[in-house]
Length: 232
Image (cartoon, rainbow, N blue to C red):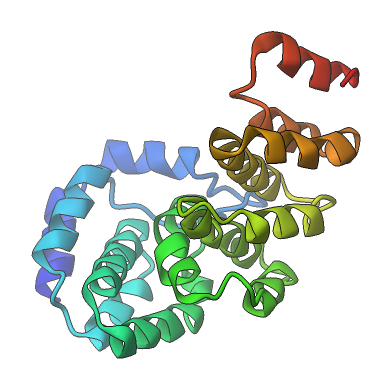
């Protein structure tokens, strides 16, 4: 057993693990079906990831393939940190390794922790082909990776990738994509209200209700009610 696995198991709490299993919807037919938890608080996982940020890539990927959710989270946190600190060659290698292992990035917290840095930071916002490929996937997690990857560019004032994917995924059937798209639209609205509302004006009546609610959450109450009533 590795030092990392030993440290994780020592921090496990069965009661917290049971709560996490419910929270992350691991029951039959739910989006996290079959996932397993040790029961470790996220700050503790982050602290362990910082302590092991120098792990060789092969070891990190071994942890990413773990059946334990917190071990996969630790691996992704290490990859994100190594990507931030790496040179161009190292960053590309980490990006490719991540894309080769997306089947293990299989819950919303794992996606949200990793996609902006490990995918978004590697992409040219003028070339959306890699995001289109992910957005067309049958995997809800790969589609969510595509959406969350654009957060990297939102934070830098570049909104085109987000708006393009939001339009493309407007009819996506999954609630977790509705939430992700709505969240990213809300982030655009924080930085460019006019562009945010121009996008909504043409589409809000066709948006899934959850997507719309997330997208307009920060608007003034009267304006928000107008969207919800279809009166804008």
